[in-house]
Image 1 (spheres, rainbow over the protein chains, first blue to last red):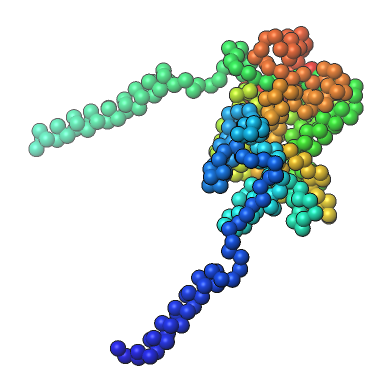
Image 2 (image 1 turned 120 degrees about the horizontal axis):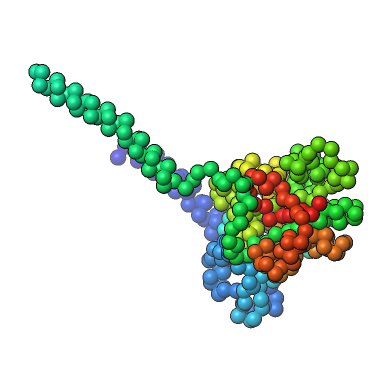
Length: 133
Length: 274
């Protein structure tokens, strides 16, 4: 092998650079699991927690089509017997009173930027830097 | 040699004859079977067997005329609830319900020498929730559609802002958000006070009256009707046009009413007592 020394040094530099990204992510910064603040006084949502975690966006789309297109505006019952309006603003955010402390926690962690709030109005956040309109 | 020429000419003649005859036959069959001829000359006012619910409105313009400010209050209630932005420019204006002169609301009825009362009147106008809505046919994404109650609805999520519906609507009932409704101009926000029960819209979306379908489903009157009747009882009557026993059907049987541009065949659900 020609230029063995140079090749090995180059390889070493490459490995250090490539792995440094992974290493940085593992050690520095907060890489903790996001913890959205759940509403107090409630134990269950309209569907199971697992379903809501993975597929709340599917449910929202279904609600949208049912309400607007099919006129099925009847309320949904939670296991606790609470009637929930099929609505992001008047249903979900009725219990989950903070977008910043609930929606944003996971969305920011996962770096997803849903466009719900381009039109829908988030609840007013009390004395929080972020203005909710 | 002669023989082949004769054969060739015969064949060519037959082919030409077949070529001329085929489209004629075809068009005959089309004329006999096609149901898409010109509409009936009567202009969209033929009686049909009604089916299902079809909500409609009767607006008593006389009562609005006798109560100045009532129409404006109706507009305010609607626009405040639905977060309708106020762009300070008439070209960008967003309107779900508005007032206009008689000649503009009823251009077909602009005859010579109208009386002063009619000329001075400000007439309330809104989406006609047509039974045969041209906007719905024009929409390429089905963002606008007719719901089971006869209201012409918008799914703002699906609107791509092509404005075909605005070109199709003969009543000017649709408005386009040229600017973001959440923005502001000279420090003044376009939506002064947000109603957190209803969404706003975003830039590039068309919006219009939805006949308060979220209320009518609960058996309530639309907001404008509720506000109008708070001012004067019977200024606006809302109900099912297909139900012969509804109040609106009763009013329509007893009173002379007109519609906006009925000759277009859109079959509006809004009626006016002049």
